[in-house]
Image (cartoon, rainbow, N blue to C red; front, side):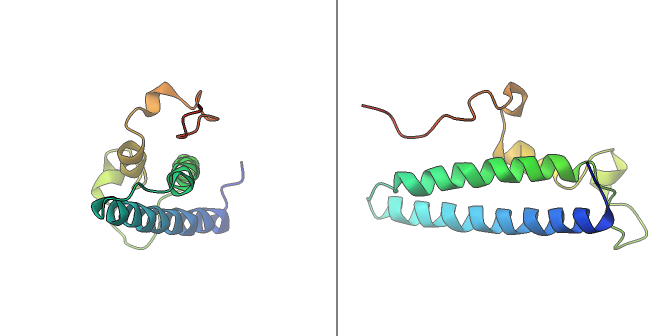
Length: 110
């Protein structure tokens, strides 16, 4: 895999965009559910898809060198982790189980 500075910057940008989009969609789903309406299944499936993309992006970012915006490393970098690892754990608490159910859908089949 090519971990050039340009690719790492693109991955960081993608990570930020995915995070913002997921947050926006989750807030939308919560708003709809507070109004007593069931969230559209399509929206929930889109969120899951974006979360998988975010997970993959975060894994790739772990291979990138830390950003050089400051001279002192961030506390998370001092402990041998990346700033993206917490987002992986937050979005995928059972990440140890792997992606065996990648094709699964939220929709129950009748």
